[in-house]
Image (cartoon, rainbow, N blue to C red; front, side):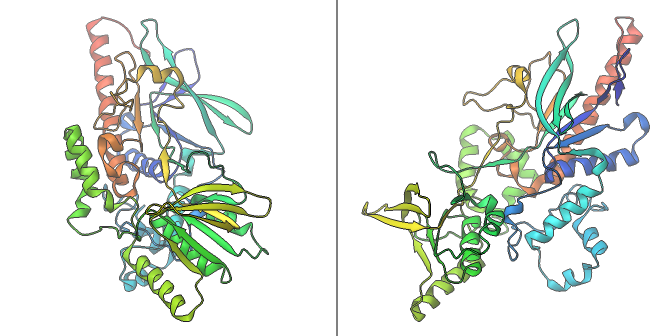
Length: 452
């Protein structure tokens, strides 16, 4: 399906991927498997660009005892192709741990192990990716009739700028750490995404107090980790609730993550979409595994009995002030009930306050002007994860993330990754074959010529 323009040696890829996190690694694997069984004419040419120097997925959150919140069966491939050689079980076999994992009787691997699986999978398709390459711009290429048949992608690396061409893009640039407005991250103010790297920077220091803000899984994990890692330090958890809320991972509620739920959500009216998110937000947002909640409660109770309280929970409260000083951070914690303010001096404040999706159109430049938005200013997306564009833009621009408003809660989650990339691949192949047949008809009718 690839092409070379007449009089030009530049290859036009069928697909260029922006970012190479788990979603686009899964996309590369799906393409590799497709090309292995497809004829030469149906093979899809693709290349991915990743600004990191090597594969990495939330490295700052790979706490040694943190586990995944999704089953290992929701890996990069199994729900799309259970026979794939890129599955988590094949990874375990290659590492000599398959029997040990089975004896473990656990659906939820350690997060550090799943990251190693991602690295193992990414390494097998590394001929499709250029690390240390940042996509800095996308521009349309117009033919004489003003139609855009392919895009030029400008990439920056240590060797300068390069321009590549593609008929389709798949954007998988992930999420951006979110901190409250007015807060600036620094040596003493962290986001939980950088926890481990920042903690390593404290080597030799003896912090006396940490303040952790947030009520979700990451916040609770950070509290437990800091409490264990620094046995002389006080760890203060600040959140607006009475306590951490348990995640609803019951069988019926988990149907919100089923592939079929994407179809239902996509077809639902706007008011139903909002209701579904309200009903089932507690499957993923601001919730904590019940085992971790129980462990933290037992720990705080034990400390009360022993009279050595290092673990403090400032509940029904908000952090309303952060003042960074040379040797500490002065925080203000305000009770939501009484309005009473408590001043806490800490060595470090950790914001486990979530992420925001990157603007999917942020890199597209003037191409973004050809992508209409809905009444709320959100990008419009087709069921196959392709951005709606004006008719003269013939290129497909696919999103891996940033589609929660159209496709539901699994937009940026691992749960549906394998199925999603299969649907994108099917769309790519179907649209490519249709375009080829249209060109054959055009030439046969004598109505024009084609350069593709």
